[in-house]
Image 1 (cartoon, rainbow, N blue to C red):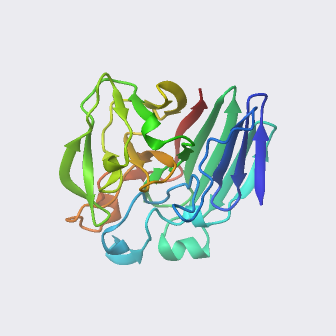
Image 2: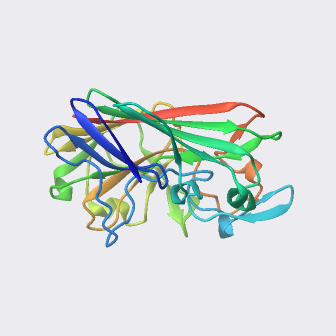
Length: 283
């Protein structure tokens, strides 16, 4: 099942499977979300929960008991329930169940709320602790912005002038090796060589937004003030780029496996609710 919301400027469509955004069009019917061609990447904008990235050996421990979680967690592969709908907004819910408890022994509710305002789509996350213990989790977004022109026609414009230091991935894990993304006046021209070693992982970015320029003109802006970390990724020769606001990231090679001690993890107290949001604006 799918749900579509709209206003006078935009139309967004969301799959109930994974509560995944798969289309965002302007009123000229131009598509801004990657189509999901599996020859490159069969997703559009998955939600990453209860982990972001990869665990060492795909394994973690809680109270010395081992559990298995695949890359980016299970939420993106599960059916969400539509719990509220208006013309320009839709809310989806995933609750812990027998299946999730085998992989992740915590009682939770995850909500995604999509809202269109003018030329922006806001995507809000709520994580509700419904159990009697603290919950450790990470959460992140993975929207793939469609780039219909030649990849080299695009550039990133970061909100702030800063040293763009990112961590390299090794075997899908975060390494201590870092590099600096070369920028001139906040601008970074795009080319596929930037992604030869997989995603660029910025643990503590100062910028709260990133604008994609098409032929030097503003194209799409992603704002992520609530999120401390950012991943940027594409596949070689793919006509899209993913701008990924994150709380948390992959394990390090020397990670203990204890999820409560994982770098970047959020610890949510009993009966508390975590809120965060980001937005995609068509320019």
